[in-house]
Length: 307
Image (tube, rainbow, N blue to C red):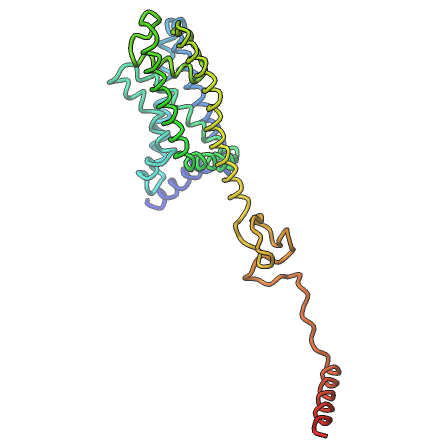
């Protein structure tokens, strides 16, 4: 009995979690198709005219998708040895988010709008189509963002200070009739102006206020490239770290060789110090005749010195 259950779990695991067999790949493609279809139903249901005519059908279909996804999650947990660990993983959280809104709608009306989170489950297409290298590229971008978070935080702090200062300044200069009735309202104008959005719902009317507004627009254009440059520098650094090593050449001491390089690109020295160079010339063995001649020369020299 236990052998049959173990075999069933193994079979389910190969179908649900793997993608190297036609059945497993078909399961993943069918799952992704259901996810996209369910998200489409949520969008269609948000249109008032369609909801009025087909709302009941959309509701039935939504509960059908939810039951399918709930059964799928139950099977995923059933065929795993550590199901709780999977629930705490990235894909496990996505699977929970795919079914929770519908079940929560029984207690919290309006929770169905969160069903669009199901579209995140389409990320499984990377595994189905063997595109995991894109996941690696995404991980590199996340690492670059993490390394630049302090610089970006400092930049955002500086922007916040600029918004606060200019918001307070424009609040003192402009009359309330222009729309600057409070400090938060003035800071809202400063954010819109510094980011060069310019909604136009509130604008300064005094010459000094207009001068400050123009200055903030130019300032916004000048600082908008700062976080982009910081992030780009970290991305380039990540690419260099992934492609190049910091191993120094034992011959010339230069660094910056590619990780799969075997010889120095500057002097041609073999880089791997732990293994011998397979192309290095073998040391020449001394000839017996030459050794005998050198011995005779030393003997003659010693005899001359004694005489």
